[in-house]
Length: 177
Image 1: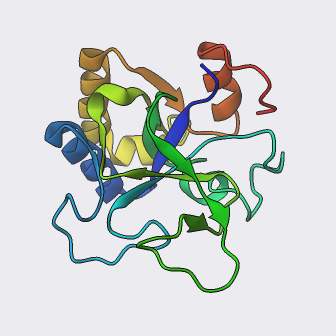
Image 2: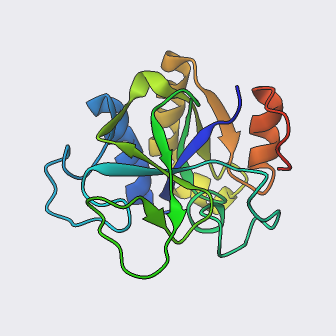
């Protein structure tokens, strides 16, 4: 594998419910596919944001130029195969049209149109070392672990070593984290 993609959900209990709903619905879906009236951000209504740790991105995991600092580290989400049809985003520079332009404020963001089928997921990440988070969300996390076992997904802690551990597990070379 050349890389994996990460789809981060955040770190609120509702985000765990969203992960469960994604699994039950069969995929990560764009706002349009969810029949949502939300306009979305840079990804618009027809695309899903994912990110990939790339050697071109700052080695600082808390860089404001990286989606990892706000959406991956310490959060929950999905790890996705690298063979999905993802479009690398350009850094936002001035005005853009979310219906046409694939732009982001993050160097490591990619967009996927419409849906990422659950069959493309290879793992999940959770803040396993956050004891307070884990104890407050025990039932949801146990359900996610059950689903991960059923789908034979790997489970990773979303701490600072997430990328290093994922890269090691899937033999991804050339990535600094």
